[in-house]
Image (tube, rainbow, N blue to C red; front, side, top):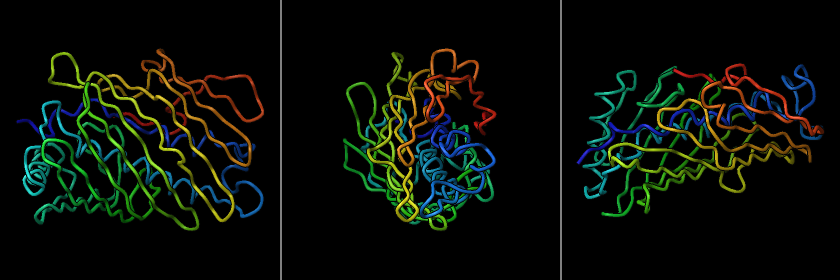
Length: 286
């Protein structure tokens, strides 16, 4: 049985970081750097930090998602042992230790998990549980965890279950940074390729609701069918909608985005979509 070395599809779930940076509906860029909607004074630095906890947590799928032939036939300690060995073999920048079914992962000031396009940082304690032959659940404790120097602390979970065409995953997180609190997560569909040795595609959508709150101010994030091909850095389909104080902004992807890194951005109070270079929004590929 092969374990963690064949993860190809879950590259760059960085879109959720982007919607909290260059795509926020907070007026001009200068204003967006310091303040949010009137009322409770959403600070974007706090919002970035909490949101990057979600992005960083999504990258942990690169650590825990099984290969296409995973049968979940080992106990939790045995699967933790396999993950530890794979990390030590394939991601030398991650410091990993194990105590039974509990793994401690330290990404330091920045380290990309195997097959991930996003550098994450901080510390993760992960406790595994296995429903033999069916699924694996990972309980997460996050400490100063995130990406792009934006970190938050809190808890989360990752569940992997077998599906007819591959695997279904659910990632959840509840983390805070300053006064900002992030709640929500992702559902991920991994489709196995015809060769049964790799993944053909990955598509994710947000759990409803996924939001960042500061006092009574709220940012809602709605990702729908954001799809990546094997080893792709950029999506080839799907969209991300951000709503704040009734204002909406949308970032949409098409087949050309996968090769060009250009998405379509519709600002608040506008019906016109403009080209948006993803690298310019902080979307970093290996």
